[in-house]
Structures are given as structure tokens and as C-alpha cells.
Figure 1 (cartoon, rainbow, N blue to C red):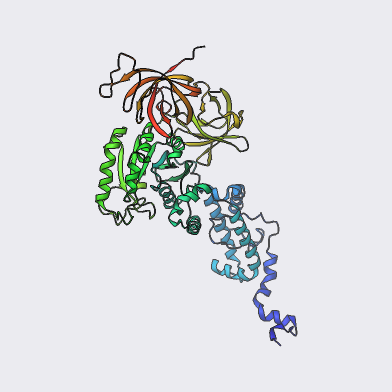
Figure 2 (figure 1 turned 180 degrees about the vertical axis):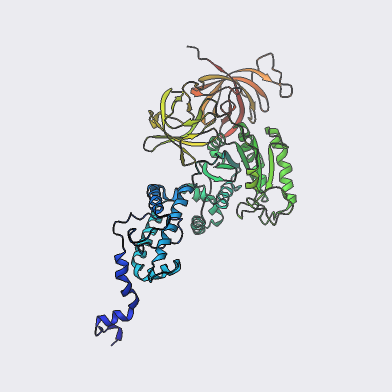
Amino acid sequence: MDPRDTAPDSWEQEEDAEAPASAAELPAAFAALNVNAKPFVPNVNAPVFVPSFLQGSPAETPAPDGSPEPAANMEVADTAAPVENGNTEADMNAEEETWEQKEEPGGDEGGGGQQDQTGSEGGCEEGGAAGREDEEMMMEEEEEEMPVPKVAPPLPDAPKKEHVNVVFIGHVDAGKSTIGGQIMYLTGMVDKRTLEKYEREAKEKNRETWYLSWALDTNQEERDKGKTVEVGRAYFETEKKHFTILDAPGHKSFVPNMIGGASQADLAVLVISARKGEFETGFEKGGQTREHAMLAKTAGVKHLIVLINKMDDPTVNWSLERYEECKEKLVPFLKKVGFNPKKDIHFMPCSGLTGANLKEPAAECSWYTGLPFIAHLDSLPNFNRSSDGPVRLPIVDKYKDMGTVILGKLESGSISKAQQLVMMPNRHTVEVLSLLSDDVETDDAGPGENLKLRLKGIEEEEILPGFILCSPDNLCHSGRTFDAQIVIIEHKSIICPGYNAVLHIHTCIEEVQITALICLVDKKTGDKSKTRPRFVKQDQVCIARLRAAGIICLETFKDFPQMGRFTLRDEGKTIAIGKVLKLVPEKD
């Protein structure tokens, strides 16, 4: 029979053989146990945990200098518990101090008299093993439950970083989402574990090069097809600025979504694939590269960064010739759209899949001497925005969540909690219940920030994308008829009065009809024709009167450029771009 299965002669002998040490220390440890201790608050960022039940009660121990401190600091920790992982740094420091201060008295009378801290830990090990395990279990459970917020809230006294919205545009499969995902990984917004999970899932679907884009393409349909449909959102921070990535879809069926994304952006990144054949298809007549660059310009993006992606591809292999070839073809076109090649455009090579030249300069690419992409974004000059202007917030999206929640980018003015605003064009008075700027709750927000507002006094069904939140004392204009200057970009036949198209203005999408052509404008001199034209054709500029199917919010381009420029689309193509010259009051 196995000796282990037999019962011992005497249980006492067995125990004594195993634990002579702990038996002696247990009564002492239990005597010092504080039954009325404060509830345990796990702090993930604390130094190594040393159990404190070896401290005597304050009455026995001659208190060291800072004895009232630990109690006071524990209070801080308790109140801060609900926002455990999102604590401000000040709280973190306070909590760290608590642990250190508690270690010192513990060291004075550890397991066997005077020992240093390591000794006290050793002495506690046996007596306190069970206690340690419980508390570690608690730590683990807590850690699992708490979702870690991706962006740590800034310190209260830190100056607010400038918010910049960056839209990624370009042809299908140029690598927009992958670059977005790679940037989030490089700036630490997506942890390695999540990416490894995506990589495994992507491998199972035989799509292993897509895993980075899954950080931005979150829904199942986008992942299965590898095409972005909706504008993905994410944020990352550099030393000076706070960036919101808007990942626009490249597919031509989803251009309306892309226009919505571009209308919120301050800066566009045109992603071009350098791979043989891909650049050409993206750039030829039906490709999205041309259309997107043009839409970005119309949407009011002033600065364009052209990222020539997939430089690591075997057909390219970081060759300078290919880079220059792409550049030469793009410059004349971008110039025609209205970007100034010297000031507004910046070219750079990169590889989204390997992350080369996004954060660190690429070793393979010795001929490129400029800054890598993230560093270049950080070094851009500030955008001047008026925070004292009237409040204008075009609505991009809305949903129900304990009230009515709307999303949009604040174009001008500033919004604070409990402020009364008016929803145009329906003139509903609403109150701001809470503000989230990039998913971090704040009390006030300035222009250029992407906001989620929870509103009181309006139902979700009463809001449509394209409505605008305004300050009550300065409402935005709304109407149906307006005069605009339009440039016909591509249209096979002629355009006459009575022509219908879809108007995209800020975040609003509405059907319009050209009711009258007023005059033609000479492209070179800017002179207006004396007679009314009977029709306009491609590449002509005219002033026309347009009438929308419903009432829309708009401003003249002169007063408020972000809400005065528009695009006209028809049959899935962008036909014209234009700016609002004047609003025509309705005839009753």
C-alpha cells in the first residue's frame, strides 16, 4: 500500500514536522489583527504590497512622525475608488504614499522583532499567506471588472492641448485603416494584447495583413469585407496636440459618409498606395484619389499630407523613383483642386503594415530626410479658431442613451454644462446635461473638439443629422432657397435649370434643384457674364439659384466658411463644388 494513503500515527507529530515556525507566530499575528480596518481599496499602480496587519494598534506603538497621515491619505483613496483606473496623477501619488507610510511601522515589529522591510515581508509570509492570497484575488477580480479608459484624463491644471481632427482619405485598399490602427498602436492607444487577438482572428480568416485596420473597422461587415463603411473614430495624443482620427471609407458607394467625415476635419491625410497598378487605378478617371482630394478641399480642409503607403511592397521596395513618379502625377492635380503645393501639401513615404516612418524614421528609406508622420503632425502650426464666436455645432449622428445623445464637431464658440442652446432649424430649446470630449467627460469645450452631448428637452426622433446647435442669442440662418457660385467638375452632358442633385453641406444631406442660372463667371478674370446662360457644362463656373426640398441650415461663405461650402452629387459622382453667396428669403 502506498505510504501516502495511510493515516499518520498522531496528527500532532505531522503538523509539527511541517510548520514549526508558523505555529509559534500565528497567535501573535492574530492578536495584532485589526478587525475594524477600513475596507480594502485595490490600487493598480501601487508599489509591491506589504500586508499591514503586523502593525500594533496605535495605542501600543509609539507613533512615528507622520502617523496621522496614513489615515488621512486612505480617506483620499476611498473617495477616489470609483474612478480607480482613471485617477488623476495627484490621487495616484497620494495612494502610493499611503502604502509606503504603512510599510514603515510594519517594519518596526515584523515577525521576529526588529527587521528591515524585507525581513518584515519574510516574517509575514507564513502567517499572512492566506490574507495575502485573498487580497490578491480581490485585486485580480477588481482588475478584470474595470475597463481601462484609453485616454487618461489630463491633470486639472495642465493646459488644454489643441484638438486637431485628421481625416484619412484615399482610394479603396490604399491602407487608410491600417495606418490609423498602426498609429494608435504606436501611441499606445491600443494595447499589444488586443492587436494580437485581432491578428489571430485575421489569420483564421486568411486576412493576416488586415489586423491593424480592425482597430478602426469595428463592425463585422467591415471586417469580413475589409472595407470601411462608416467613418471610424479614434484618438491619440502627441506632446503638444490631441488628435482625433477620422477614418473615411474609400469605396465609392460610401462617399456620402466620407463627406460627413471630411466636414469635421481640419487636416486631411491622403493615403496613396505605391504598389504597382494600385496607384494607377486609384488615380485614373474612376478612382477615388481624385474625388477624395477634391471633396476634402471643398469640406474646408486647408492642409493636406500625402502619405505614399506600401513602400515596403516587393514591387516598390522603398524606391525613390516610384515615390517621385507618384508625386509628379499628383502635384498638378492637387494644384487644380486648389491646394498650394508649396504651402498646403506635404509628401512623405511610409508603410502602414510595418509602421516604418510613422513614428520613427525608416532605416530602409535613407533618401527621405524629413520628420516621420506623427512628429510632423505635432510640429504643424496651430489652427486659429474663435472661441468667443457664436455656438455652431453641426450634428453628425444621434442616438438614445439615457436621454438624447448627439455627436458633432464644435465649429465655433464654446459650450459648457447646463447651457441653454437652440436646435435649428426646428427652434427647439435644449439644455446640455453632460459633455464628452473624445469620450472623456468635461465641463466645457472649445471650438474644434469632437463632442458627445446629452441633451434635455428634445426627443431623439426630432433630430436629424445636419441640424445645428446654436446659441439662443445668435441663431444660424435656415432657408430653402439660396444663390451660390458653383464649379462643374465632371458631368457628361449640360446642366440646365430644373436639374436635380444631392447637396452635401456641412453634415447635412438634402435634395436640391437648380431653379435658375444667373450668370457665368470667367475662371481667369472673375468677370460675370451680362446675359443669363441657358446651360452650363463641365469646367465652367456659374452663379445659380438653388432650392432645397426641405429647410436646411446654412450660412453664407463670407460669414462662416465651414457652413457655406457644399458639394453637389448625382448618380454616385461628385458633379460640382460651390459656396453659398446669399440666402434668399422665402416668398409667402
